[in-house]
Image 1 (tube, one colour):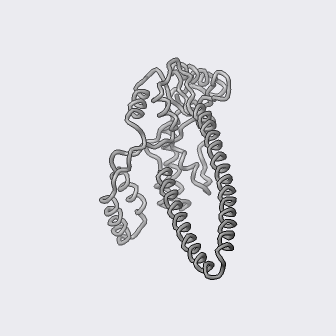
Image 2 (cartoon, helix red, strand yellow):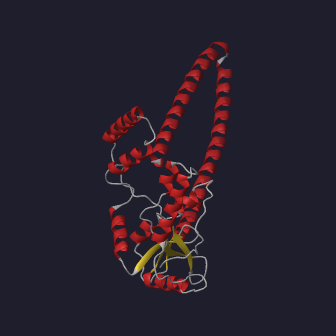
Image 3 (spheres, helix red, strand yellow):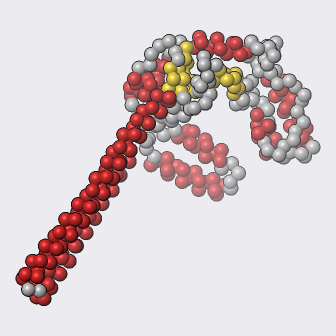
Length: 305
């Protein structure tokens, strides 16, 4: 896209230069006609010689300036390509026992946050998102918004693919490979490919630290969820929170935090940094709600694994 616009801009620039040359040539011819009637032939020849000499000096000077600019841009482009190449080597780190193919590495270089363009327009997701956003709108506003969204979706077309078929195939092969794991690094936005057995071993070594973690006999998530909902109901009855906030904080089908590790690529042996996914955890929305000072049960924070 950038190259296309660059070529169009260059053509436009060249066209403007040609128009300027034509304008200067016409002005020069007019001046020469006026000079024919005011100067004798000898003086006219000498004047033309001076003008030609000045034109050649100006042309040579401008040409040297543009040659220097071109050389600078070419050298800068080479430096950027080398810099880009050296950075690309850090985008993917393969510490597994198997080599990556060129296609697999090229696909992984796009990063873990790379979004593949959909083959079809996700109509259901868009409509669901719109409906969720207009719940507090009036009936007239809802009808107008739905009408506009419907019109846009009727005309919408899927965007062109931003990944090749070979890269998609390579990513599918990696996802089917149960012996390897593709994971984000702790720092540096690097994609790491490691043996799953190595990852599992490092995770077990972290969880075996009894000073930090302990094994629970039972998953406490359901009890925590019930306690939380009872407390929210009590606060609503005491008019300390309204119905909207109560529904927002009310928890159902909560899941316990999920433990995982991110490899520290800047350290020897690539140790894992422990992390927890708190998505759909019972207390998460309550904790994230600013300005709320809720009394929570005095409970030890543990990870159920």
